[in-house]
Image (cartoon, rainbow, N blue to C red; front, side):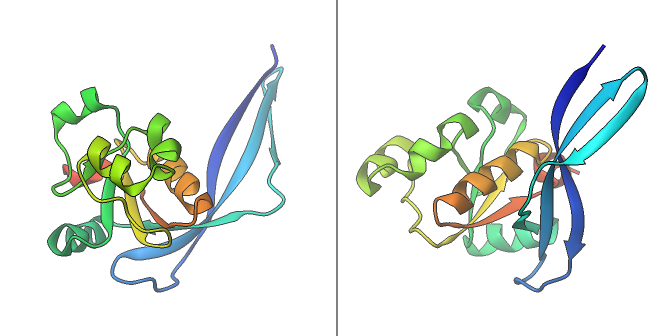
Length: 157
């Protein structure tokens, strides 16, 4: 049986200083194919993207200061288990269109001021996978995107 799956692989964590608790990492897209019990992995990304991440201490500082804004990309039903204080919810499927809304419409729809292009945003979810996807989307739209790689699972411990 042959199957193919795309996965994200964190290749290398750098200790570049971007402020308290924020580091840079490289993420590569890999294609993994299994044939007859053997697994083959191929790097399918010619140019890896550099993505900032933040740890729990960095998120605590953001909660205390309100900067950067924290956006939780989980679906609304998932928020019943708790949220990071001061975080705002924009579900991942709506993120790209939300960040492209006019400021007034954004504020009416999401209940907080639309972050200015180029501003720093921390993205969280349940485990960090959707947060990484959200950060990549926001980075592509001109934001200084930061992924909370441990996300709510890390926060709630």
